Image (cartoon, rainbow, N blue to C red; front, side, top):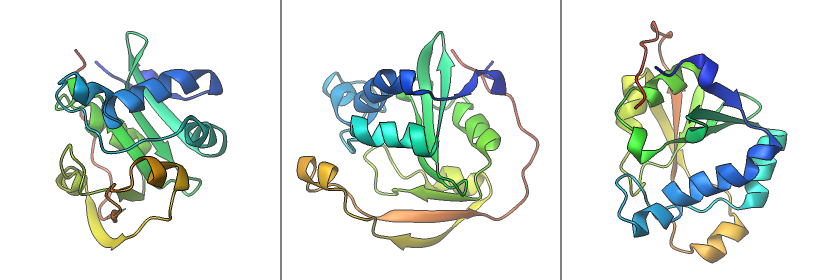
Length: 169
């Protein structure tokens, strides 16, 4: 079982492991190996991860000392990144993680290679209120000039329900 005890705030010492995790699942490494759930959608530079750890709140869930879930929340509690390892999806970990984080607002790309996360957020009491273009990120725009650039904003529409435990393999 994953419990809130496994949820931890990332420290700067986690930077290398976080970069490896997001590169594997988001920047093509896992996709080249044919791993289900891996994409070539997004690249997050080490300097951006460092900023997330030092200035925002970066959260991790680990299983057997390996990251299986990662998220970033801003000062106002808005969720701006949310990633569950493809090998750990559909096991309730994302639902549990979202319940514990309890963001009032979520910024999400709906046109991800891994699918649209909108229905997941809607099933957890969020409603899409707008779509917008993100600010330019020169480090990413140079590497991935054709990246998808629409961000959907979801807000909480109902009170939290009782958390249901989730399983980890």
